Length: 371
Image (tube, rainbow, N blue to C red; front, top):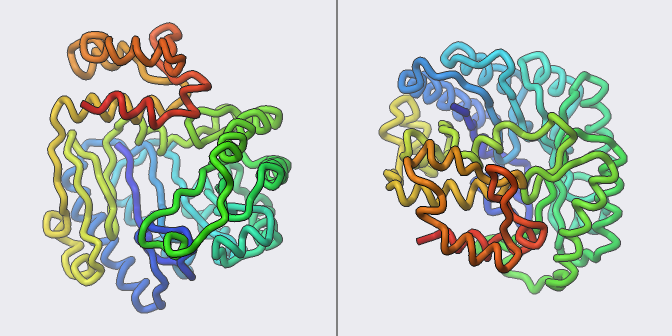
């Protein structure tokens, strides 16, 4: 199984962000960490005998927590869960919230993969996104993490943002790749309802420009030694994010913290998003869990297809048969033939995967596997 820990705090919410996050003071952070530990301790009973292969601390911005708080969370996890010897322990962090003391604490308490939010290397673009840092601050934090000993770093970049053209995106890619991180997550902006961006008239790149940006990403990063292993993720060999791969392959995961989602034994549920309720009832997980959905076999098959096909290696026919007791062709033959004729899917050995054209039109492919 995998473990996800949600830290909902940030210095300032970015203008495009629709995640469950908000600024909060020292007192509230302490209350939250205490509640998080209570939930971790109580929820451990249902995970007895299971091994945790990855832990992911996300947010929000986990690095806004104060000295000793991340270490306390990791200590609680180790005391209550059985982590594998090679457990991947990832943590998201943002420039402007880091210093040498924090980074040293993270490394010493066992975090072995750091995910740094950069989004852009161009100051005008950073300002348009509402980021709290400059590119110079990002570089300073990145180099500090390296000097302290982090050997597995991801950098987040965002394309198709207001005012961006293809040349600017190329500069962003090359500038970050020159820093030689082990992993780059390159996402296209999605303007979500309820965000400041949604209320504005934005000058966004055209669909053609956005398509060019996407196609050039794999081409440029390949030159730097990255391979695309998922629609939006690129890694050096052996540095693929284990936690995310588990999500796309429907490995069971337990989400702890405010609003955190879980997949357990083909049941999906999420924690309450009301802080007052979470702080009061975190020690009794059943009281904070909402939106429970028991997945039918049909639901499971749909998820197997549209999540698994996000990976460039595709999905395994053998694994489909092992999980569902029937062949993929028995269920999806007509749809697969249609998508193969359109040049969007292809077979390689046991795998069914997206073609390069299919990656560009992935949403069109995924909808075909929804009954």
